[in-house]
Length: 109
Image 1 (cartoon, one colour):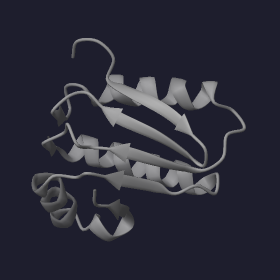
Image 2 (cartoon, helix red, strand yellow):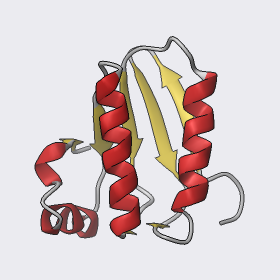
Image 3 (cartoon, rainbow, N blue to C red):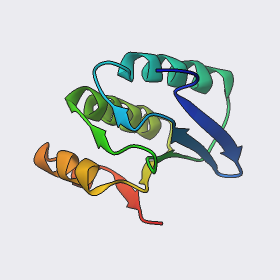
Image 4 (cartoon, helix red, strand yellow):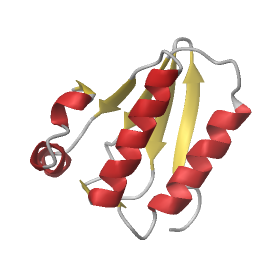
């Protein structure tokens, strides 16, 4: 991975995370998760939903799906919702095969 794993914008009522890589997988998800944790730690006392914009991401593997589940559960603990925006057909199928598709709020753009 070169550069930052994502860019973010803290908009009223939502935090939007736009991922940079075209794949989220075993090889980059640890760096993504670490950067995400640091970001959330720096935004203490924020409220609102968290939106993962996956427009640049073509595919995910099981380790990235696990990251999405952990992020979803973490958001839920704080009263927020994790929303997935602009997911590809490949990502949709991966979540569906893992029986996770209905666990997320999906937003089509």
